Length: 66
Image (cartoon, rainbow, N blue to C red; front, side, top):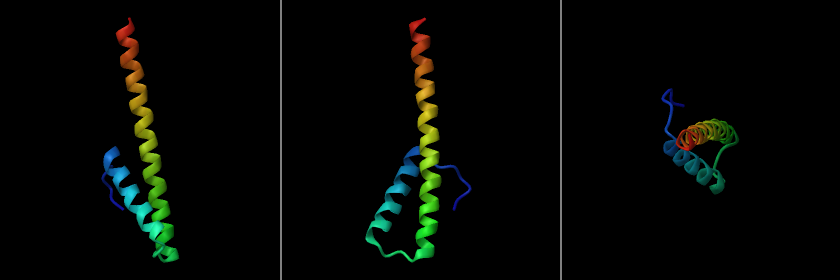
């Protein structure tokens, strides 16, 4: 796992790859566990980024109204 924080797009692309790998069902149980943990980390990252963007957009819209 990388130390670099991914962009939203990078995280989504990594999630797509992980899901495709899991759907193929060719993963060893230990590898599957690592993939699920990585997917969980990426989902949390995406969720955080979406909430941040939502907050910023709301803030900008409120500024436009005043």
